[in-house]
Length: 237
Image (cartoon, rainbow, N blue to C red; front, side, top):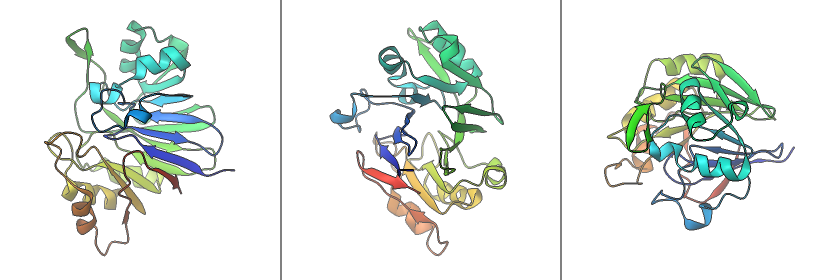
């Protein structure tokens, strides 16, 4: 099976081309994302979208991508209901809840808790979008990674380590709305991962955390910080 190829699109958005020939987007905040290069705004193919919560900087271009490519969308049940109001067919939104596992196209999505908030801008009105979440995602070759979504460090991360055993974690480090590098370092230790991909930093001035700070906090732990550039393709595991 071919390598799993990842591209960080800035903020918390990732594009994944799996070794089993699936294209997954996580939190596809692309066209309105000031950190996302213009060449990544256009989505040529998408089989699955995984959404961590309903905030605009995570929901992003979901509806536009859906209308063009008709991917399956994985999200918490309540967010699927909101998306249905905007034209997403019930059979195309895999509504689940924290603690559950859904298999879509041979890929497993294990929905995990996050400590944050979640709402959806529905024509200028903020409406309930279900609880915020993260995911441990198992690709076709058995590789597991954890995308925490927007969150603070929490004791549940120890359960994520024990139950799901992810190899890599994508963790926010920007601070203000999420963990900063100090808290993210603790989260990395608690999840038991070998490598961390920092995210949700630098998009706006208030997201001031930096990968070098995370690396300093993790010195001597054996956990590697993969400080990838926006738009850079990298392979995992």
